[in-house]
Amino acid sequence: MISIISIRNGFFFDDEIFNIRTVSSYNYSSLWDYVNREDVHPPVHYIINKAAFDVLGSWEAVKVLSAILNALGLAILGFFAFDKIDPRARLPLGIFLALCGTTIMWGASLRWYAYFDPLFAIVFALILFSDFSLTKRTMILAGGIVLLFYVNYETLCAAPVLVVTHLLRERKNFRRGDIITLFIAGLVGLALCIPQLLIFLEFARGHGANQTSSFLSALSQIAITLVVGNAVFPISVAAGVYTALIAALGVYFLFVKPKSDIDWIVLIGLAIGTLLMVVTGIAMKPRNSVFLLPLVFLIVASAVAALPPLWARAAIALIAGFQLLGVVNVAWHRDTLKGSFNIDYRGSLATLAAWKEQCKGKLIVFNHDSPLNYLLEENSIGSSSVFSPKRGTDIAAHPGDCVVLTKTYAGTLNADEVATLYRMLDNPALKQVAFKQLGEDRYAAIKSWVGKEPFPQYSIEFVEYDVTSDVTLPAWSGAIKRLDEGQE
Image (cartoon, rainbow, N blue to C red; front, side, top):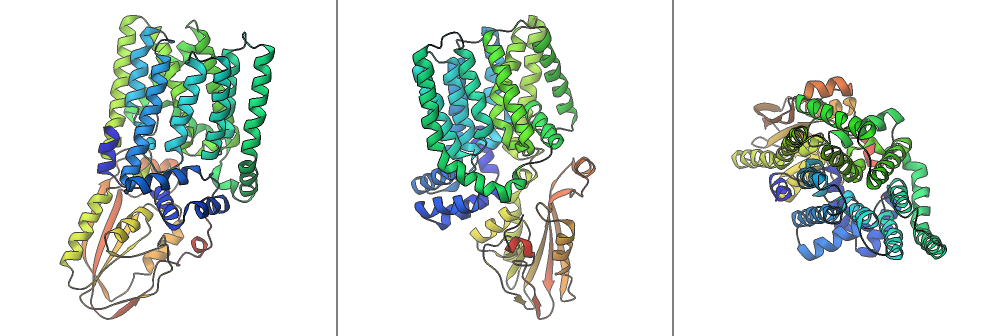
């Protein structure tokens, strides 16, 4: 339900627009070849999206489907964990699984993590908590890793977590036949992954820098994702209080609480996953570490369960309050860590549609925002953008026409490139007649200080001009050469 509200109130973000344009441009076989040639991410999630769109006929419906899959993955985890964890841990775990704004935000998406995260949660639940035979769980482990690898290369960090979880659970039960089964399953799984692994290694040699960061950057980002999450801005009073709570529970779990076998297995798995994500630098992006959140949930829930009743109730209340704050932020697209998720695209469309209605001639919107440009195209509003899929020509404007300059966060552009774009509309034939700001960002100053780059006070600004004389305006598509050349 929360995901549906969020989808209704929001729009697609930049990576999702890339996914839509890519999927819409190719048939299934061509799509597989194109993705393997042009994208570091494996092609399966593109194929799933294309099949889902062909059946459902709407990209919003595909997002609803991905939200359902994520809810299902977490529900399966909760179902199998229910009888295996401390009964007092069930309530806090249920709160996390049902109300974590971070998993809701990234789960209702068109990108790889919409399928990777629930699949990981299901495989993890089955190999750690299910009563299936050892042989069945070994098959689930091998098959799950193969499926995960064809969804995303992050399996290189996730697979060791699953393997160690499986080995630790059965460390006293492995017999000769079980070891042979595990070895054969591993070899078959590796053989199935090798074709995609070779493609990944070849592509990563030239593009790996775009997917990784320094050790400290990755460490700070994964700490934010696994402690505070991405649904509440991390440098805020609420996030500070919650961080102190989770830190205290973490210390209590590590040094005070007697730990069960499950506690140790989850802790070791989380440590391995975190270490690999940080060392490789893959943790640089907030969404990349979300698959590890269920392990965090299990540890925190276990710590809360061991507290004295009064302290446990207080901790549960604080956890629930913080998670509800994240849910509200995600549902209404405000104050999350992802800036483009917070932009009021529907309000932007309403503003531009009203200006188009009032304009005597044609309306042309200049923008450097990929989702907004896609939204304008879908609603037949003239636009010129560095993210237009086709190279544009210079635009002839005449008295009575209207021009709108859209200002948003620079994103992949640098400050000089943005300034160049804005100067292209510095023309005496344009007379400013209206100005509107949407989505005030109360954390803009903090973001600018931490990021050491300017962040706009408002997520989106529109400046409307009347054309007072005949003029030819240079198109923004093609204005940034490196974008034309496929560089980021």
